Image: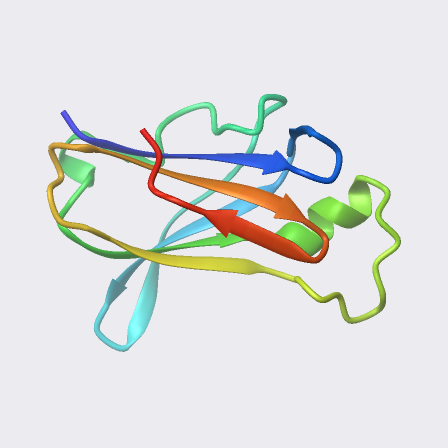
Length: 117
């Protein structure tokens, strides 16, 4: 059975990014449809898959990571208008029987992602 998961690591601190808010959207037509709002735990992961079973469908999705709020709470002295406020990752699910893991490696001035396992 397939599932969608994420994991956020704070590369500047060398630790998991805990208590970071994430919104998951399905991209259908012109307007994104909010499917779930969650937060990362102390390990930088969500306590449950973002989607699994029948909820995981073929299609286009978006993860919105609210990084500026996390960075400020973690002690970063960000300017009034931060370089990164929200990080948005658009991705596709072609085979809902597979595992889709979308990690985010984060700092105040850069990020990267990939399809993990």
